[in-house]
Amino acid sequence: KAGVTQTPRYLIKTRGQQVTLSCSPISGHRSVSWYQQTPGQGLQFLFEYFSETQRNKGNFPGRFSGRQFSNSRSEMNVSTLELGDSALYLCASSLRQASYGYTFGSGTRLTVV
Amino acid sequence: QQQVKQSPQSLIVQKGGISIINCAYENTAFDYFPWYQQFPGKGPALLIAIRPDVSEKKEGRFTISFNKSAKQFSLHIMDSQPGDSATYFCAASNAGGTSYGKLTFGQGTILTVHP
Image (tube, rainbow over all chains, first blue to last red; front, side, top):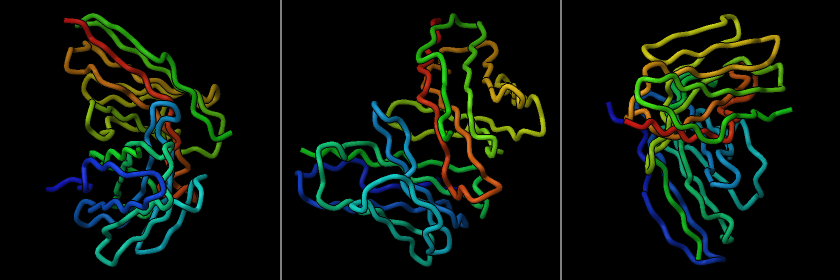
């Protein structure tokens, strides 16, 4: 059974650019969450999608957005990149509608220069 | 009120010893408390989780102890092995409510097990 797949694994972008990260959840999982991981702030929740609807959102600026497709695959977009957006972006999926048992992918390492 | 405080930040244990990591929370609406293990270059992997209706849960060498009145929970790793060397995160959520995918994580503990 394949795990959560995130692409690309590494990304280098310039300040002011935008970036799109992709997440394919475990087959059958309908809930997808996104997290940002940095050494200073740790793991912080970005947003969660279930059946193409955003049900929850963390305290991040509007430059951070996401969406989920009918096959449960999800993308997150960051516009007008800032140096502080450099982080490991993690996607997690869960089978259940309630928020138990999330399985994380290996993440996308974004570096903004 | 959303914070989860984790200690210690780092821990060094000899092979065969017991590793203990502690977490404290404030939000009484939290009803799900998982522990994750993360190796370098990988995402966090779910180790073990507990709900507040039980005081202890054991899976192999890993045990969660939960104290609802003190709002604290801890991870015990028995017979620690060098392969357990990783970063451990506690987390909490109102999984049965409206937290929808939101886990509140502790700051992490870097565990090193010496052979």
